[in-house]
Length: 469
Image (cartoon, rainbow, N blue to C red):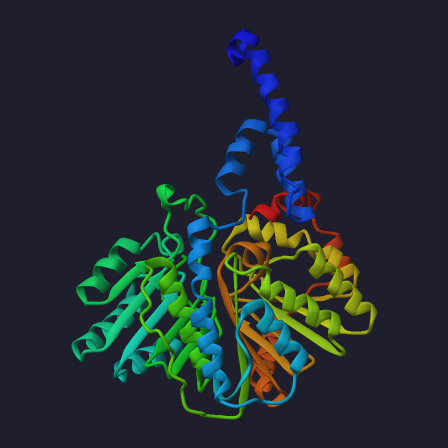
């Protein structure tokens, strides 16, 4: 019919483009941020057909119905987990913060934990291998990137030794993050007897048509009593030529490990429909730290990490320090930082000067001038790619995890963060952040404004598509 109405191919294509433009103007703004709406409409207006196809592929940040139903099936499991955690006893303090975290992530705060922060990359691998070698019941690993390089084979070797001792070993790995090594890693793990599954695999027939919605979490669990959470993947620190990663990982013991175990079991169920355990054991009290797990992602009804971060910045009284390798803030976060500075709060952003993703780096640089003019201090970490992701607020609340401060982590990725409460719990992270500042260069607003015009043009173009990155 379309061909009969418009026998001239050029005229027909022009009409099709306008149909797409008008239709997408009605569709795109629905339940989408202003920034993302602008970016999508700009793409569609300039390139209607490619833009519409691109939107059909990755434009809707939601999972298929079958996964939504499967996540809903976990409500009884989470309720049982909360009841188990309640038996550990209540801890006082930070009630508002903990209540918000629980509402957006489902996990309560728990006391009685020990937290050791490790910012030595090879040291994390050493400790993880040693803990796996001491495992007696099970080892569970959820990771974005698992390579079969030197570092990865050390972990695989430890998992193989654990299997020989009769320890159950399960690995959940993101196939997009690990695509370069996935085949070799799978072969090595299966040869060691380890059960491996892919997180969020690309399956059109099952309705999984978005390759950009990823499981970006990093959780390593041993015997349900030791847990690791942070930014580090299982790969050599210099896996990118010319770039060396610098990370931060929290090794924890105590009741908080039950929450980490719950997150792993839920993710395993979402991919396999198999519950490895119906009930999570409560680890023994091991120390004085109060902690809370904050899982976030498209499975949840709101943007958990972003919601908590923006709210805490609005509530900050003295100082906020944010460390992130990728900074693509939304309007809510920009507004919160501007308002906080006007209230007299000092805000420091630590960004890596070493970049591994050129377009993302250009987009994030486009925000610097706006932030600097509002009084936010930006520090560029020298030498290494500072891939760590952490926040301290007023020296009494800290967040350590896998989530970047960008729209991708806010809206698209499955992430997990560890929230720590209390001055004593936050002090070790504060000390590490001071080392970040010492090894960084403060960005001068006047000098930054004088950077070459060509750089500004490139950065502004990258900013236009930043909500899509």
